[in-house]
Amino acid sequence: MFAVRNSTKTSNSTKTGAESRRPEDERLGIGTAFTFGLQHVLTMYGGIIAPPLIIGAAAGLNPTEVGVLVAACLFMGGLATLLQTLGIPFFGSQLPLVQGVSFAGVATMLAIVNQGSGLPAVFGAVIVASLIGLVIAPFFAQIVRFFPPVVTGTVITMIGLSLVPVAARWITGANPQADNYADPVFVGIAGFTLLVIMLLSKLGNSTISRLSILIAMVVGTIFAALIGKADFSKVFDGPIFAFPTPFAFGVPTFDLAAIVSMTIVVLVILTETTADIIAVAEITGSKVDRKRIAAGLRADMVSSAISPIFNSFTQSAFAQNVGLVAVTKIKSRYAVAAGGVILIVLGLLPVLGRIVAAVPTAVLGGAGLVLFGTVTASGIRTLSKVKYDGNMNLIIVAASLSFGVLPEVNHDIYMNFPTWFQVIFGSGISSAAIMAILLNLVFNHFSQGNPSNPSVFAASPVRAVKTDVIRVLREGDRYVGGKLVDAKGAPIPVVDEEPEGSTAH
Image 1 (tube, one colour):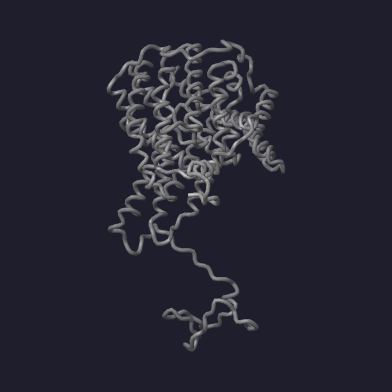
Image 2 (cartoon, rainbow, N blue to C red; image 1 turned 30 degrees about the vertical axis):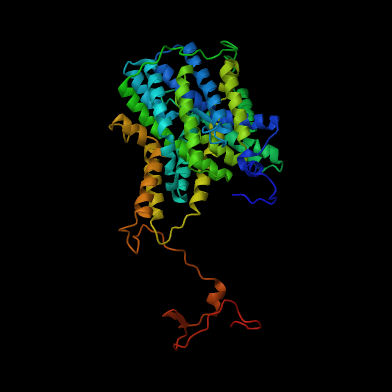
């Protein structure tokens, strides 16, 4: 709680004053807010349009219909972001979190489409599963007490590590069979963008430093255009303005198997969003409790339930934008809310979306290396606060990170497992989160049976002796029975400070 200096203030004014001092409540000028909001949109744009492109292609949609899906996802992502950042009673964490189509459900939605059920079955499954998630969100939020620093630090670190392959795919291209896959020119564009970010971050001007990601993307795109690697020829192909048509692909149908599979996806989304809320709170210094996490999860679920009406899919927080908050140090939720407005405009004005889509993915990859690496560094900083001596925290971190990295470095490891298993454990974030929570329960909550002297997996305390202490020791001095004695067994006085005027020999 915040201290109140003026006892004559009413309880309402005290509450308002306390809330206004939250880091995420910082007010920004309109121009500043929308500038940083655009930076957030550019950071997550590739991620938000990828699911509709993949699902649309699998469903056999033509380019115009795929464009409808993309615009719908941008539009709903903007609405969900506004709900999450600004909030209404019981809905929205009021934290700087960008919302968009969750990639966690792509595999399941592909399976539903490939079974011949089509997009209506996907939309029906999303609606029912999201409503189930809405009901269980408050109960799911109760796990926050099982997220001490050893868990949150592990999950935040895993979020950053799991996003690095995304940056790699942006740089190399997503299709290994393509002729220009891993083109050295693309790697060079990414490296140039990264270099610009570093140079701008070095400048003394704080504004330029904070906008380094956005400026570098613009400069990187111009550079790519000059060498013929950016194509703006299709910017004006298609309508300038278009409002998402409700149920454009037919009335949703409800298949039990599809609903069960999508409910598992929703559980994964709830896990990842909980981790993202805790991560951004750690970065911004915000205070979150069960009620606030539950409000954030409700915002996810109600947005996901409404999305299919406008031809979109499940919504969740975007982890890459958590990294952007860490890089720019702009903690204001209003900057992210401005990004939500931009997403809505992009969804209503497809021409603007096509301009943003023209930014080469290699440029996004160069920026992503900094953004995602910053998330990892934030997790490591949290883990540095954890006490490791005399407990099993080291094995919790080691096993959880390894378990989380496993599906990221080998996507085929669970290919012969059931779809629901692949959905849960195919995500490095959810894998690490589940493992860290379970191991924390086993070793730190259900401590019965833990050895008094932990195994080799427990970290030993760091031992160090100052050089000035060594300097005064003589041959034969030793520590016996809690006392320091000389070679003849005579005790040597141990003092906190040297007596004034004494000299060491």
